[in-house]
Amino acid sequence: MKRFATLLTVVAIACTTQAQTTEDSVKAIINRLFEGMKNADTTLLKSAFAEDPILQTVATNKKKQIYIRNEKFGNFVKFIGQQKAGEADERVEFETIRIDGPMAMVWAPYQFFYKGKFRHCGVNSFQLVRLEEGWRIQYLLDTRRKNCDPK
Image (cartoon, rainbow, N blue to C red; front, top):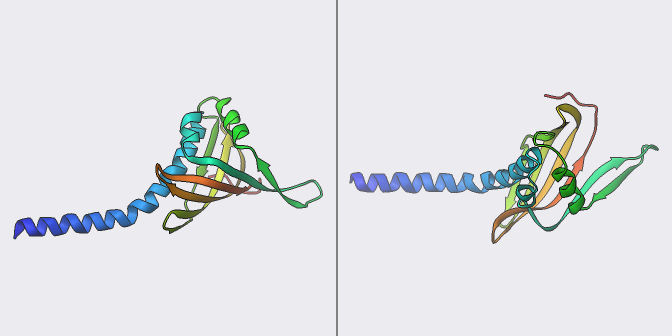
């Protein structure tokens, strides 16, 4: 009987862990991106992304017109690789995570610090896909503004 109770406990824990594991694994891959940024580790950074990811920013020009700025992934990786560890520090909060099978969406407000100084804040909108090697970021769209309070 004790063995059966232990088995039930293990199954209950496994079910609970499984429910948390998918969301946690999505968070982990996004945290990998920011760990790679903070440590200027381009290998770690690239491992968070799918092949040929899309990176875009919702920006405002001098005439206050909103437009979409595209960033080449290679340029982003190159920029991070030119930093010293600790210089590019983006701090996120996971506000919303939605998962449907092999696709996930994450809404994550952030604050960006460069060389120890607050630069801007905004929201990252991630689209992830679960590939054979696990979750990877396929699409990242962000906003950037300066009118926010650093934490």
